[in-house]
Image (cartoon, rainbow, N blue to C red; front, side):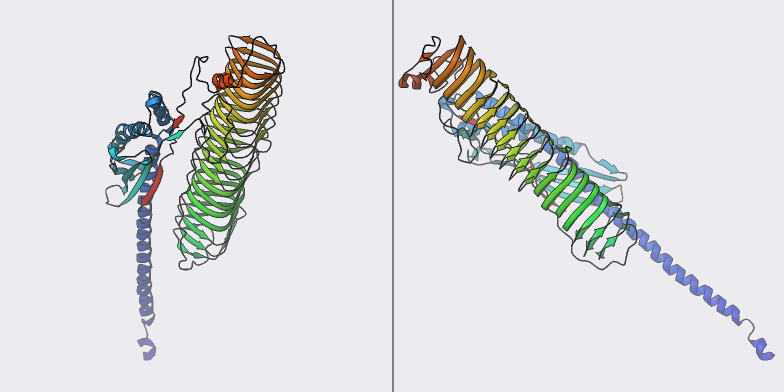
Length: 614
C-alpha cells in the first residue's frame, strides 16, 4: 500500500507536462500564422504599390498621347503650305514648315500639358495608394540642324511613382514616349499614287491628280515575358490566391485565380466560370472554360485559349497559339495570336492586336480606338470600325454585313468584299486588290486607293473624296459625286447615269447608259459615251466623244473625234490644240487654276511608348 501511495500525484505531472507542451506548440503555430499574415500583408501592399505606379503610367500616357492630334497638326501643316508660293518652294522651305509645326507642338502644347500634369500632384488609386508624375521632360534637339530627309523625334523621358500613404513604401517607373514628325512627302503630278506598288493611273491630261494620304500603320502589342518554372505546388482545390509555384493542371467547374504566378505544365480547364486577376501565367498546353474573365494579367499560352460562351479581358497582355471565344469583350488589351483569332461576337476597344487569321461569326464586330494587324485573312459578317488602324495582309470579307469605317485607317493587301455595303467617313483606305459590294458604296471626307477594280451593285455616293482606282469602277445604279477628285485607270461605267457637282474626274473611258449630269465639274479622258450629256458651268476634254444628245450651259466641250461632229456646242480640236487646251487644268479657260507644284503632305503617326523601366 505504501508503494501505491508513493505514486499519488503522478497523473498530475503528466497533465501539467501536456499543457505546457500544447501551449508551446500553439505559440509556435500562432507565431507562424501571425508572421504569415504580416508577410502576406507586406506582399499585398508591395503589389498594390506597383499596381498604383502602373495605373499612373497608363493615365499619364493616355493624357500625353491625347494632345497629339494628328488630324489637327496635319491640317495646320496643309494650311501653312497653302500660303507658300509654289514657284519659289523647295524641300528646304517645306522642311521649315514641318520644324515650325513640331516646335510649336513641343513648346506650346506638350510642355504646357507636362507642367499641368506635374502640378496635379498625387492622384488616388484606392486609399491609401496614390500615384503621381514626379518628372517629365522632352530631350532637347538641335532645331537648326534638321535636314529635310531627317525625321523630327521628340523623346519624352518621365518618371511615375506609386506610393502607400505615409509609410514610405513606393515604386518608381521610368517611361519614354516618342512623338515623330516624319519627312515631308512631295508627290509630283507625274506620280499621283505614292503607294509603292508601282501602279499609277494613265496620263490622260488635266494635271493635278488626287492627293492621297497613306493609312496609319497599326502599333504592335507590347511584349509579354513568360515566367519560368518554379517550385511545385501541392494540389490546390478551389480558388488560387497569392501563390507562386508550378502546377501540373487544374480541372474544376468554377474557380478564381488572384495575385498569383503560375507555371502550368499541362492545361487549365473548367466547365463553368473562371476569374483571373492580377496574375502571371505560363501554360504549356491549353486554357479552356465556359466563361472566362481576365483582368490586369499577363498570360502566355502555347496552345488554345478558349471560352465557348464568353470572354471578357481588360488591362492584360496575352500571347496565345489560338483564341476561340464566344461573346468577346476586350478593353486595354495587348494580344498576340500566333494562329487564328476566332469569336462569335467581338467588342474591342483601346487595344493592340496581332493575329495570323481573324474571324467573327456574327454581325456584331466592333472596334474602337484599336490597332490590329492581321497577317493573312480577315472574315466576318460585318464590321464597325471607329478611331482605329486596321491592316490586313490578305483578303477582307465582311460576308453579308456592312463595313462601316469612321475616323480610321484601313489597309488591305488583297481583295475586299462588303456584302451589305461600304460606308466610309473621314478615313484613309488602301486596297491592293479589287473592292466589291452588291449594295451601296458611300464615302465622305476620305482618301481611297484601290489597286484593282471597284464594283458597286447598288450605286455610289461620294462626297469630299479623293479616289484613285488603278482598274475600272462600275456603279450599276445611280452615281453621285460631290466636291471630289477621282482618277480611274480603266473604265468608269455608270449603269444608270449619274450626277456630279464641284468635282474633277480623270478616266481612261467613261460610259453612261443614261443621263450624265455635270455641274461645276471637269472631266478628262480618252473616251466618253453617254446617251444624254448635260453640262452646267463645266468642262469636258476627251479624245473620242460619243453622245446622242448634248446640252451645255456656260460650259466647254473639247474633243478630237466624234460620232456626231455636228454638235454645235462642242469644239473639235487638232492634236496640238487639244494638247494646249486639255493638257492641264491650268489654262486660259479655267477660272480656278490648279498649280503644277505637285502635292505636299506629312503623314503623322500616334505617339509610341518606347520603353518602361521598373
